[in-house]
Length: 132
Image (tube, rainbow, N blue to C red; front, side, top):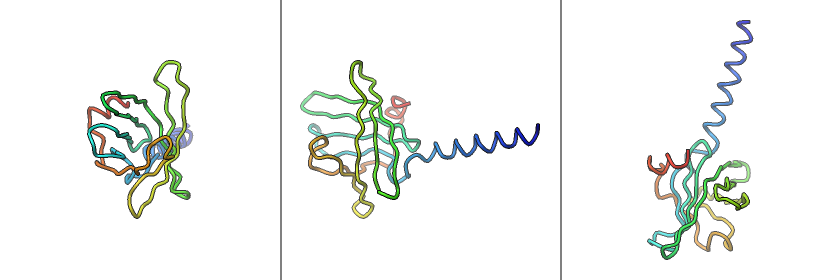
């Protein structure tokens, strides 16, 4: 009985540790592809892989919650929208991470020509609450 409890505890602990590190700390935070007040996309990435994105353009804004994973071998971040919007299918997008320039580059036809730069290593508490 005690061995079973210890085993369950170890499995649960390892799963929790894995979930806590879904993306590297260098990728967690707020990323933008433009510093202007309009015409930009922002990615919010929490260390556990939850997040969101918003596209802001001339007063219009769209966004969705996402889940994110990172492939350290390919240096590739994959995000999947959770389709919080009714009638909208979930979408998956990939970004290449350049550790030298510390930028994320996605499909230019979807995200624009400019790479994403991390503007903050953390997501604000207000934004993080909305992503949970």
